[in-house]
Picture 1 (cartoon, one colour):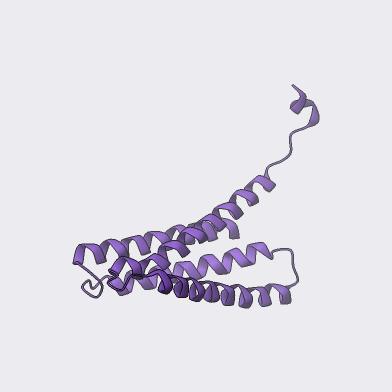
Picture 2 (cartoon, rainbow, N blue to C red):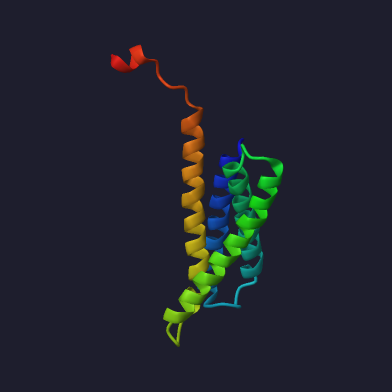
Length: 140
């Protein structure tokens, strides 16, 4: 399994755990009412970090190890900054009597963006690995 595939699987698992967390919250009737919230959040967060790290490593696979290390630090810093910026934007549009769903939107958006990025990277990795058809076969 290569880095792009590991990143994709981790992103799918992150989204699945965060969807399970939202389901647990909904079934329990709101935030703080389900004992599954914290474990599901932490599992999703762990897979999210794995997906970000492996995606950055895949993007920098042909770079010097020092560049890869700096890219990892930068990638995690960018992920934290994007999360904080999105939280700030949500705070500007969130209604005063917002329900628990507003507290979960950031996870859903982050999971969706990461899924798109990892899916694209995985498609690119496997497209590049396929041999190009010979000219004669392409002209048939």
